[in-house]
Image (cartoon, rainbow, N blue to C red):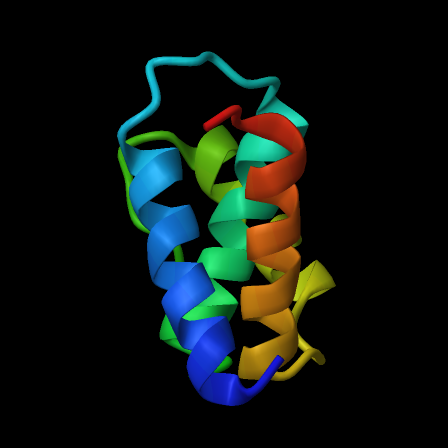
Length: 88
């Protein structure tokens, strides 16, 4: 897939994930979160915000796990997770 094709698939996957009413296990939610942030913000300095220290710790841990991957790879992994877990 070309980077342009990946961008299109990523946009579709994000739309699909955003519009589902399906409930996911926390580990899947954290993976989706981390890949999305790595793909869209890729600053390496992103710090989760929220009102729960525990949630923020889990989010930060998820972000650290994907820290070394490229934007393109993060998009591909996000697409893969959505395709595997969210029916069309």
